[in-house]
Length: 406
Image (cartoon, rainbow, N blue to C red; front, side, top):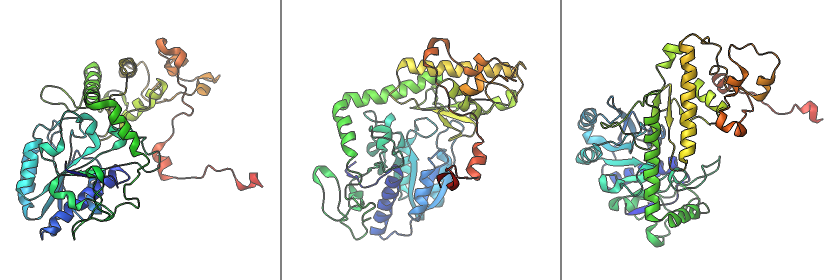
């Protein structure tokens, strides 16, 4: 990429700014009517939201059974909307956890119809040092610094989502009109169709940026590439180790995944009544915060180990997932009822396990799920199962009553 703006305070803001740049570029060419944004069904949910915020009309394109963008459907949509095509938004590698092998063909097709290609940078931790979106056909990308470049994950406050563009889009990057910054960082609305500012600070959340700068300096080119390779290797390791217990929903023709794998738990509902949410809650008993639940496919778990976990930690997670699958098999065999078992009752608090009344058909030791090799490091969930849906729809105040403060 030729230019970058550090203004956006989140990846979602980076999407917004990048799409504004595309709209500005079209306007500068007298093509403001281009308002169609093609988005594959595998995209992040922020993609269609960002497109609608900048006034684009979203048209969803299909994915094939392997999770790839359906190129035949994409071609048909490009031809149908050719006169009004503004952009396509893809995530590479996709949210389905696969590298789109036709990505260059996809980019060329969209360019042929006058559109620009937005490559969502959510999964850049599978690309750094290995592939460059600006080289395989991308025109715009944002970077999630919390995912790939080491800053904290927001925590309710502003993050950083820099937006990068190719040469002819540089004049349309967001800025305050103060001129270009040293090092190619753009802060200049140099065109009548420029975006202008998208955040109050000229360089966005600048206090956080030294974290990413130091990370890059300390890792070096070799270290950054190694991190990418480790992330991809870890995801494939988990996928292969769990293949006999939980099939991976999407993979490439050679059976490989990118930096994440979607474990398919959908068949468990029919055989045992167990849902992905039950597995997620049970993982708490084994000392794990669950992976992404039911996204992008309902009743699945999307596991993204990143480059940060040790082999020991990966094996501990795999052992826990296998142990949970064995518990499901006991339900399938009828040893435990479908409505009263360690998964449906998870997570188990210390208080519930010490209660004198224990009405369940499995032992307290099973409920505790303390793996023998790490019994000394057992994590105890502070609360048991709650009704998530009811809580989302029926908000109530947990504050101390005013009468107690009087």
